[in-house]
Image (cartoon, rainbow, N blue to C red):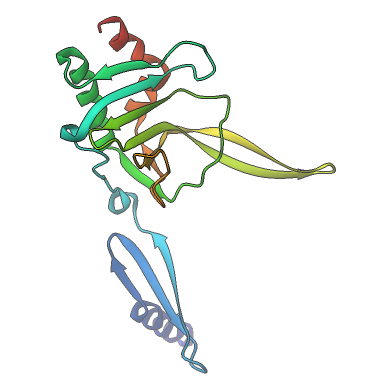
Length: 196
């Protein structure tokens, strides 16, 4: 009987310190001696955590430049908004971007990993948006020191905004889940180029 009473008391204490805000569970604890408060945030259920963002509006786009092989001497493949066929390709990609699932804000820069394909969306105001595959980075240690390894994120892409001078916009780099965009960058772009 004592165990049941103690469990009920603990449940009441925990529940009074919990609240749900914007799809995340927030747990607040307090220290009675100095009344300090700390907040711990954690993801709630997967259905609640899915967030879609508007990456870009089609009306703001001038062109899209796709670079399938960054180290090659070939120029990027360009799609222009004023060409009807090419505009359909841009609209398809923008639709995928705008229905992507936001999985991580403030994605840290991690450098290039085998120079993957990427594309740049050029805006009418001369700003741009870079889209590239996402990677998870792991730091390991051995007897010679520490080193980093990476692995591609399944269906993951990274989006980063740049101003008209080519400087990254502060805290704009984020990870999205978009298998369609990743598949297009890896293979399906060839279909759109051949019908260009």
